[in-house]
Amino acid sequence: MTAPVGRFAPTPSGRMHLGNVFAALLGWLSVKSRGGSFVLRMEDLDTQRTSDEFAEILRQDLRWLGLTWDLETEAQSKRSAVYDRYFEMLESQGLLYPCYCTRSQLHSVNAPHLSDGTYVYPGTCRNLSEQEKAAFGRVPAWRVKVPDKIWTVEDFVQGTYRENLATHCGDFVVRRADGVYVYQLAVTVDDGEAGVTEVVRGMDLLSSAPRQMYLQSLLGFEHPQYAHVPMLMAPDGRRLSKRDKDMDLGFLQQHLKPEQLVGILGHACGLLPKPVAISPQELALSFSWEKVRKEDIYLDISPFL
Ligand code: GLU
Image 1: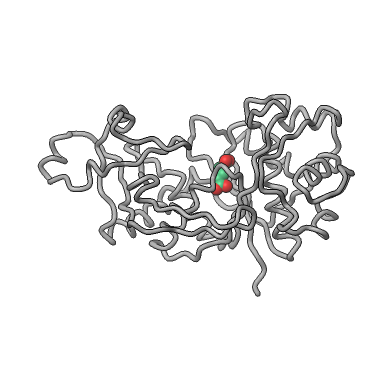
Image 2: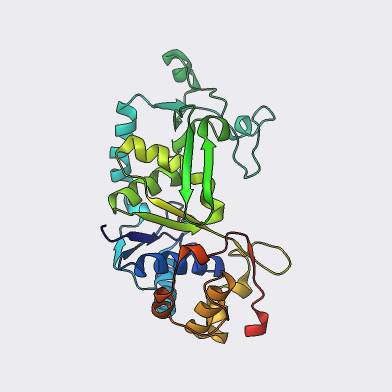
């Protein structure tokens, strides 16, 4: 078997919070426990929210944690010419069409909303005539047609997850009207080109996996193995996010050593019987996905501070 290739693909829009650290740690442990390599990639498609300064702090934070990477691939904001090529590949398969729907149309009562905020696109612009397209007089977004087919994700943590894109989200946008490629396309191309064999990330992205598997199948990439790790929750039930300043690494570094933080997270997810200080290298020696819990993790870090 060839060595696995994992990746951490953060959005440099703020300081890492515990949830990001947790996903990065598990992704690193998974490949390093089997002699694999780890790729870092900055997902900075949203240039308004992201910055090179945050990207540099992220790298420092990963180094502080001891989560080394073997390669950093090009940031997404620099890759629109690459994405253009894959966009053309989809277009040549007759799978793309321009969509002129406005935001308010998309969010109208006619579009059923799913619990994760996704709505099912009803295919409004699928069959527009050239005349109808010209009449809009504006630059469209582009959608990819989805088949009525069930995609099965065999997830290391969550087990089997099935989804039919036709009923889950409908035809989805791959390039926005402002020309920016969407996360689903960029992540598929970047993981595929980097030869990523396993994608470890937060559970909130599980329902993106079928869209990415579909694009992988169209663009000629192998499906990676997936592991969607539990979300970390504050004791009061909130999901930890970038808004929780008290849980970002800037704050935590003032109170904890990296090995302590690794031990706390390793214990919280089931890898360690006690929250003892441990380096990622040591933890990798006994790592196994079978030990990792799949339910949300309520973590009260205050006793450790
Ligand atoms: N860039 C995404 C984030 O920071 C992660 C995307 C992924 O891992 O596929 O949440």
